[in-house]
Structure formats: structure tokens, C-alpha cells
Length: 281
Ligand code: PAF
Image 1 (cartoon, rainbow, N blue to C red):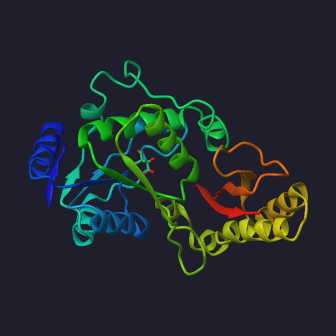
Image 2: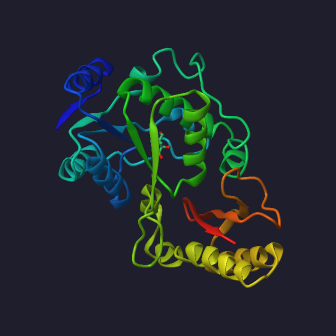
């Protein structure tokens, strides 16, 4: 695999593939890769002739008191894993490459509305950072298709909206969440969990599943949400949000809405975990 921190190297390689009429898939990541990421790379390799992966811990999407410095950097293991999964080009820029003028002077991309609710409300500026870096990476790699995990449901909607609003000629594919046997969604942040917290963490998925069941049995949104929050607190979580929203707009679900998504974020120990379930009423 070719690895480079330089924009020109990535452009040169992609141009050479394009000149032969070959297609490019892209998987942007922040590294510390797990089976969820590897699944994205495998799906990408099935869909296109070449797979480009980026690893960049993007400072613009972290808040002041978040885990930017602590975020695990595991480049050697990541590189081996994505090579085995079919990636051929790895872009590993530094912050100076991506933001040469610093964050304050950087032009940014802001997707209004859906960026400001749920994770966007808890993490102000987070989705501006995500949209900006993904837009820059798209402009560097210029893929035909890009792959993202459905676990970051709101992020996926923000990116789809950005692509549509800015008329970017890129197909966005969301890939199902990969879970541990316990049901816990795979996440780089699971590495922050102690053994006790990891044993308690599947309660997040269980709470979401119970909400879906309650709604399908005709219980009220308020009732199922209160029960689920109580179950999370009993398991040792501090819930951030637990909500049922319209699956496409992320607006608060109305009685007549069919396409729904349950979205949850909760703290346990040093980790803030998120999960979701898309379902039809
Ligand atoms: O999901 C992630 O890992 C990041 O938010 C992304 C999309 C790579 C942008 O930094």
C-alpha cells in the first residue's frame, strides 16, 4: 500500500487511476480502526476498483474539553488491517497539511439545522468540523463513492446533506453498525472502558431495543423514554440524550411519522458512547 501525508501524492495516484477509467472508493477515518472500519473498507473494495483510506484525527471536530490528545493513534496496526481488507492508498496528513493557516483562519462548511440538534447541541461546532474536513478530503481524493458507518447516524445525514447542498458528485453509502457479541456497537472510544464498564455498556443497545418494542406495542414516547433512561442510569450510564426522531430530518417525531430513528448518547466512565436504531412504526 502507498502511504503519504501529502496532498499532491494522493492527487497524483488518483489521477493515474482515473486516466485508466478506474473507479475510486473512499473511507475517511480517524484511525484506531476496529471491525466496523474494516467492514467499510471491504465493502468499498467490492464496489470500486481502488480504495483510498484517510487517517486524520481532526482537531476541528473536537471541543475544548474533549479527547483530542487522548484519542488513540495506532497507525502501524491500522495500516496492516486496511491493507488486508483491500485498501491501496492511505492518506495520513498532519494538522499543518490540512489547516496550514490554523483553525481560526480556516474556511469552514456548516450544514444548518441537523448540525445543531442531538450530538450537535451537546458538542457545539462538532459537525462544522466534520463537514469541513470531509469536504476537504472529498476535494483531495475526489472519489466516486464514500463509505461511512451508520453508527454515526447524525454524521451520515450531515454528510449526505452537505453532498446534496454543494452538488458534490459523490455517492454516500452508509454501512450497518458492527457489534460485539454483547450487542455493544464497535467504537474507537470503547477502548476507554474498564472491564466493569464494558460489561455494563451493552445496556445502551438494550435500552434502545426496549424503546422500539414499547413504541411498536403502542406505548407513549414519553413512557418508553423514561423507562429507557432509568435502565441506563441503573447500569451506570449518565444519559446525554435518548430520543425518537424522524429518520430523515431528525425533527422530533410526530404521531403520523412512519420512518423513525432512536438515537442515544450516554457517558460511562471516560467514554461518551452513541448508538441508534432506524425503524418504521
Ligand atoms: O467518523 C469519523 O471517524 C470522523 O468523524 C470522520 C468522518 C473521519 C471525519 O473526521
